[in-house]
Length: 294
Image 1 (cartoon, rainbow, N blue to C red):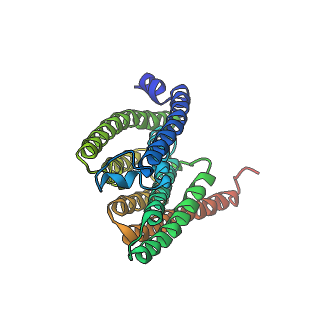
Image 2: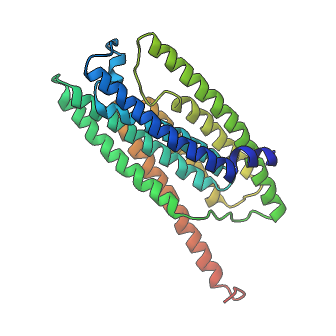
Image 3: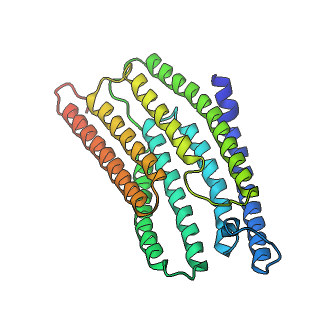
């Protein structure tokens, strides 16, 4: 499995996929923009539901953001063997981009709207912008933690076994990711050809985050073999709770979903901060012992 991990999730594979995603994002943006241009001049006849993808030039931003989100999910899978904290932080990065994509889509709808419901849309937009700021700050906070410390892990051999098990899980998740992405793309494409071009954040992300939560819980259970420190285990449990709230928020429309995103970000940041404070206190206590190294 280690060879499979290096082949599909190693540095070389990541660089190739990153370049491919950048090129696909640029191409997708230009093609989507061209279709919007064609639709604006009424050279393209579409159903009412499908036209929502092309009735504003801002809609063209939806395609590159979707491609970048797909790559970020791949990056998330790569981080799983490295650090539980980093993988949780990556989840917040993905949700941040997901909220940005929703905001851009909402802006395109407001831009094309002539109905009296614009006030409600702006209210939802404002709350989503607040959710974006909270999620963005949470992601930055997680990124500031460069390395996750594993107290009371035991022997290095045990740590190597733990990392190996997480690599095996990452390979399985990569396969699940490919299947869920293929299923989501095929069902959405079929609906599009049937005249339903509706888009929402539940497509792909609701199913994948459900699987991801199960993977996080499995990692937590396996870690009980190697980590005995309660604060560390409680911290990881808090992280999982925040990701469960993220998953519920994905399925919640409008303002309720935005508030849940804010709650998840605040909870994740509070748990991480508590873990840092406890770790510093433990470190200071050890430094005060007579046999502590100077």
